[in-house]
Image (cartoon, rainbow, N blue to C red; front, side, top):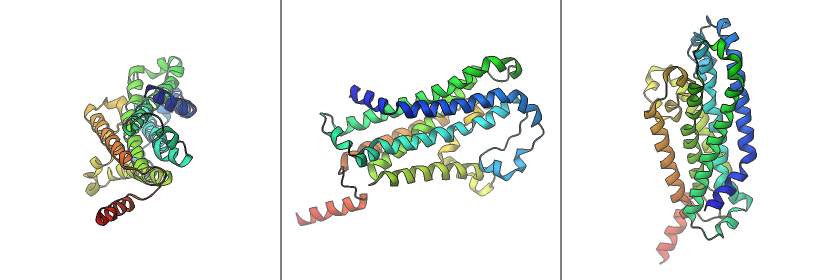
Length: 281
């Protein structure tokens, strides 16, 4: 199984480097520009701008830390998009590409195949974030004096890693959908709908009294994002995301155990066919 994990990681090398470098460049730009931007936007009232509310930006640029926290909050959304893509490709994508049958010919149980993919995805997401963190390391020495001690490298490190549980949850949800639904596009559609819909609802519901109580049912409620820089890590919320990821991983195991590979039927069709066979018996 170790060889399979290595093979899964090798398939993701290009994507991991690309996403990591891209996110890292964005983070580096934000930190590099923050000392100059913060004074200019200090009196800007973001809460009065509707489009900012939709993206969960309701705080003002009161300090450099606040400014960086606001823009770093997009990290969770960005890494979650990659998580959905790699999660749906792990099983459903390989089935459509015709490589899953070859993989299943190996002397490995189905649960071992899924476990190898779960481990590989977890490592890949972590490496993306670690590469992205290098963006901070590249520019921090040059702006450290201007930051006036408001932000430390340790805080930037934890604000980066804090997005890993969120990414894992979406990756495992997508892996489960890929094992449960007949096609990759179906799984991708569900994953992106939950991702984008949940992100927008969580942010907009924060401004609406009656809907605010529903926010705990959406993943982004548990992702502090850039707020880690000003509020610290909330281990309780991190635990919820890790637990949700574990549940979806178990569902992926169970669904793949029952899946008729290459058949591409809807779950209820499989249940009806099974019921018909039992009736005939």
